[in-house]
Length: 424
Image (cartoon, rainbow, N blue to C red; front, side, top):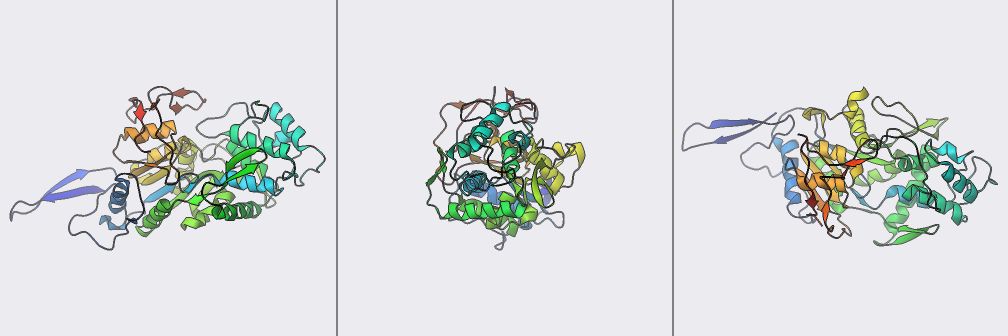
């Protein structure tokens, strides 16, 4: 596709000035502006000129672009703290623990290939062995068991401070604590897990903004809210002909309980995909690209989100699914709030939305704004204060596959200098 503009001098014939741009990045045709183009709600506050930037991208890439035919542009959103405030996995796990929905495994070691002996001992001691295998643990009454489970979820350590996970994994493709949540629900049907998430959703939406809840002795957020701005953005994108997806590191049955609230169906909801046997969830998860099915080696996490977008949306198979694609096989808009989202958000060709939670690798790219299409925005509810100091972009902000840290690099290999917080 090409962007074309014309300069007319007096009555002379127009001289076409054509500037080639990557496929799919065409600007709207010039002339009288159309009045029927989908518009973002002007009554919803965005930071700075972010609404105008997004509207420009929608006009460039959507049905008002004046470009005939072609495939629909794609937009992909992370979920937690991107489309909603707070974490739906935490909310679902908290509800499940409060209603005795975790089934006792034969061995806690069976729940994760990376679970340490220390975590296995702590869980066995706290949760006991009197409940038959496959039956619900009384977590609503057993604070010690609830605490161990939630501490491992939250901090990847036991209540005694010992590491809960160990071994080798690709730190840009998975994190054991994320994989562990759907593994905890092994033995339930996907529909049952969705029903747990739906009940948690009802409670979280009914609770006042700012509410907290107790999970064992842990205090966590007790409410979730859809961001009005993101709901409106998704509505506008769909009206403008975009194909919109959720790509979340939540278990897919949990994400499906929430995505309908922004008008997206199961087909457009991508999460951690557990393998089922006889209709029930197992501790195994589906792989991506050339990574086979396993126990969570490839999740929708960092580079794994790119892989799933490439594989599930653009139908790119094998090892190539892990690679950045040409412009015609990349999303137009990507939105995220954390380093877990940085790869797919950076892949976007039209707009990269970074909801600012002071996550270094993501915000280094957002504030560097190498292509002029980054949209950094504070959280829409209870935004964080300005980060003191700078993001260590030039030294340690990027995570390597082995878990080490180094500088954040631009596409040309140059190092992004340290950045200050500009959206708070």
